[in-house]
Length: 389
Ligand SMILES: NC(=O)c1ccc[n+]([C@@H]2O[C@H](COP(=O)([O-])OP(=O)(O)OC[C@H]3O[C@@H](n4cnc5c(N)ncnc54)[C@H](O)[C@@H]3O)[C@@H](O)[C@H]2O)c1
Image 1 (cartoon, helix red, strand yellow):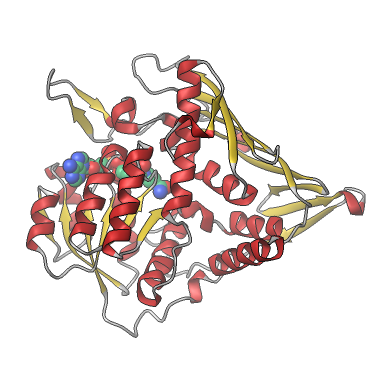
Image 2 (spheres, rainbow, N blue to C red):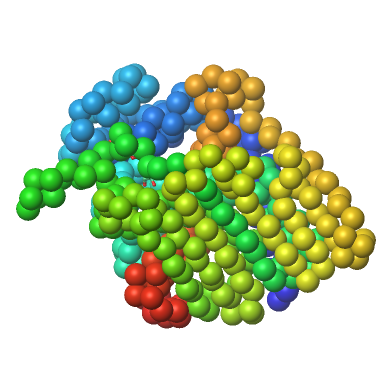
């Protein structure tokens, strides 16, 4: 049992690291994509898709004209729609849909795409409710079509390698994990949700209904990666949070969560939105196992094994993203990972392979976070079964 779990995890890590060589991009007809939601994140996708002849963006849907205009400038020839339902009803030439809408609008377009028999790449977080995630999984199963969730940070070379090393037992069994994300506030130019009753428009990241939770919007990547490495069942979740600085909004500006796994492993994570200038402390991930400690240090992975008296071994990792992609429109480290994610998405579609981030594991990640949000709102420790399965 343990051997097969380990070999599965090693294979998963290896396939991440081999992402760049996974495809012969020129050998087949392009995969035709429709993009639903064409805001800031979609623009990053479109910049990457320009470098990938494997894909052709043929249609775009968004109700906000200025966001749609910018998107079509990056996808010349794509037809634009103000309503994604019209796009899905009209276009018979699409292979897959990319969903880049605000979090509360991930489920409906995803399910509608499956009802049309299309595959879906849906941005993280999968949904704002466990029930919605279940409906998405069921629609994918019924259609027999791929649902890939956009947790591209599993493809960060250091993270992918740390997953491989922990699965290979480099630090023994993981026992404690500690991480944080200290960053600045949400983008003030995000789309505004207009309340139909009051007519008031609000940044969608400020409302619980539209964002789900601050941690669901960011910090979700890190929790997903650490949960992937811990690879255990969650037992209980507790959290505290609130609005110490940004008081005029529903969603929290800081949150500290502790997750306890069935085997007793603890994961603690802190998100802060008024921590823009935290320097080297802005993003941290430390894994402590029964036989040692592992963490990123100056672009390498430090592995300090107690069997070697705690002396550090530094593991180097390479980012093989082609130079033609880095340094053009796709510059940031984050976008290198989105580029690799598209390679894996294409590979899953063409070779009918299970996605690196399957919907069940993406659902587990949102459930951890929704339990943390509920815990801090209700001021109590919650069990895994306190939200639906
Ligand atoms: N993977 C990552 O690293 C990453 C980074 C940033 C954002 N995201 C995710 O991407 C998604 C979008 O974030 P963003 O930064 O682009 O937000 P944004 O506010 O910039 O854009 C949202 C877009 O959705 C559109 N929209 C609203 N209602 C719609 C509807 N009914 N149909 C179609 N489009 C609709 C808006 O008009 C807007 O263009 C979110 O889920 C976010 O969590 C992921």
